[in-house]
Image (cartoon, rainbow, N blue to C red; front, side):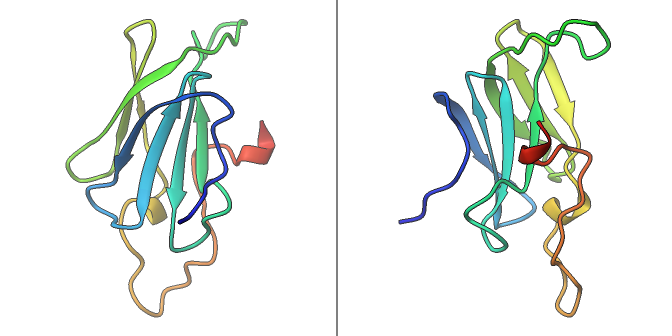
Length: 118
């Protein structure tokens, strides 16, 4: 049995990546979407994104993340929030397709924030 860091609130959805067999995403009521890469590190989140009411606005009120779906190719992750909006997220390339043998896969670059940056 594995445990994963992450939600301090109730999880609302969990989905496996259709393109990478070791990656899955989770959503929770606090508006946090997390990606995990279970072959690299099961103790930490690989990438994290917080859904907010209006990214460009002065307010940063969080909205509950209620549903997740990957695009068929795994290049995008749609996250539905409690207000009915859909946020389209783009995971880093390392989280979309498995690394080929011999490729350095020791880092995770992302357009998302690392959990400790929030």
